[in-house]
Image: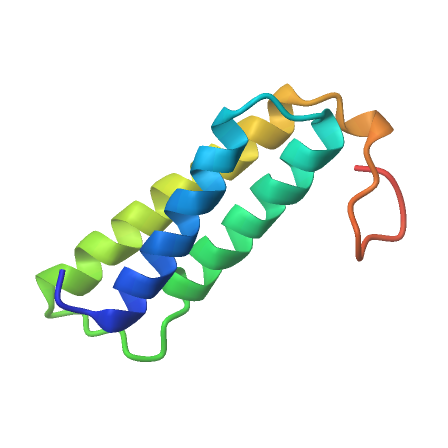
Length: 91
Protein backbone atom coordinates (compact mmCIF):
# COMPACT_ATOMS: atom_id res chain seq x y z
CA UNK A 1 0.00 0.00 0.00
CA UNK A 2 1.12 3.52 -0.73
CA UNK A 3 -0.18 5.12 2.47
CA UNK A 4 2.55 6.16 4.91
CA UNK A 5 0.13 6.10 7.85
CA UNK A 6 -0.65 2.46 7.11
CA UNK A 7 3.00 1.54 6.62
CA UNK A 8 4.02 3.04 9.97
CA UNK A 9 1.11 1.51 11.89
CA UNK A 10 1.52 -1.86 10.14
CA UNK A 11 5.17 -2.00 11.21
CA UNK A 12 4.19 -1.29 14.82
CA UNK A 13 1.38 -3.87 14.72
CA UNK A 14 3.74 -6.46 13.23
CA UNK A 15 6.20 -5.94 16.10
CA UNK A 16 3.41 -6.23 18.66
CA UNK A 17 2.10 -9.40 17.00
CA UNK A 18 5.60 -10.90 17.00
CA UNK A 19 5.95 -10.17 20.72
CA UNK A 20 2.55 -11.74 21.34
CA UNK A 21 3.72 -14.91 19.60
CA UNK A 22 6.52 -15.44 22.08
CA UNK A 23 5.92 -16.94 25.49
CA UNK A 24 4.57 -14.18 27.72
CA UNK A 25 2.63 -13.93 30.94
CA UNK A 26 -1.12 -13.38 30.72
CA UNK A 27 -0.71 -9.81 31.95
CA UNK A 28 1.87 -9.01 29.28
CA UNK A 29 -0.28 -10.61 26.59
CA UNK A 30 -3.27 -8.56 27.72
CA UNK A 31 -1.27 -5.32 27.59
CA UNK A 32 0.14 -6.15 24.16
CA UNK A 33 -3.29 -7.14 22.86
CA UNK A 34 -4.75 -3.86 24.12
CA UNK A 35 -1.94 -1.95 22.40
CA UNK A 36 -2.61 -3.88 19.19
CA UNK A 37 -6.25 -2.84 19.46
CA UNK A 38 -5.29 0.81 19.94
CA UNK A 39 -3.12 0.75 16.82
CA UNK A 40 -5.91 -0.93 14.84
CA UNK A 41 -8.44 1.62 16.12
CA UNK A 42 -6.25 4.47 14.92
CA UNK A 43 -6.31 3.01 11.39
CA UNK A 44 -10.05 2.35 11.50
CA UNK A 45 -10.66 5.97 12.55
CA UNK A 46 -8.18 7.45 10.06
CA UNK A 47 -9.07 11.04 9.16
CA UNK A 48 -7.63 10.56 5.66
CA UNK A 49 -10.00 7.66 4.83
CA UNK A 50 -11.27 7.75 1.24
CA UNK A 51 -14.14 5.37 0.55
CA UNK A 52 -13.21 5.32 -3.15
CA UNK A 53 -9.64 4.15 -2.46
CA UNK A 54 -8.96 0.42 -2.55
CA UNK A 55 -5.89 0.98 -0.35
CA UNK A 56 -8.11 2.57 2.31
CA UNK A 57 -10.58 -0.31 2.11
CA UNK A 58 -7.75 -2.84 2.44
CA UNK A 59 -6.26 -0.89 5.33
CA UNK A 60 -9.57 -0.95 7.22
CA UNK A 61 -10.00 -4.66 6.52
CA UNK A 62 -6.52 -5.43 7.88
CA UNK A 63 -7.08 -3.20 10.91
CA UNK A 64 -10.41 -4.91 11.59
CA UNK A 65 -8.69 -8.30 11.42
CA UNK A 66 -6.09 -7.12 13.94
CA UNK A 67 -8.91 -5.89 16.18
CA UNK A 68 -10.57 -9.33 16.03
CA UNK A 69 -7.19 -10.86 16.88
CA UNK A 70 -7.01 -8.62 19.93
CA UNK A 71 -10.44 -9.75 21.15
CA UNK A 72 -9.55 -13.39 20.54
CA UNK A 73 -6.41 -13.06 22.62
CA UNK A 74 -8.22 -11.26 25.42
CA UNK A 75 -10.94 -13.92 25.47
CA UNK A 76 -8.37 -16.71 25.67
CA UNK A 77 -6.67 -15.16 28.70
CA UNK A 78 -8.10 -15.58 32.16
CA UNK A 79 -8.91 -11.89 32.24
CA UNK A 80 -10.56 -12.04 35.63
CA UNK A 81 -7.06 -12.03 37.09
CA UNK A 82 -5.57 -9.32 34.89
CA UNK A 83 -5.79 -5.60 35.56
CA UNK A 84 -4.97 -3.50 32.52
CA UNK A 85 -3.34 -0.11 33.02
CA UNK A 86 -5.84 2.69 32.68
CA UNK A 87 -8.82 0.60 33.78
CA UNK A 88 -10.59 0.91 37.09
CA UNK A 89 -11.01 -2.78 37.68
CA UNK A 90 -10.44 -6.21 36.42
CA UNK A 91 -11.36 -7.28 32.94
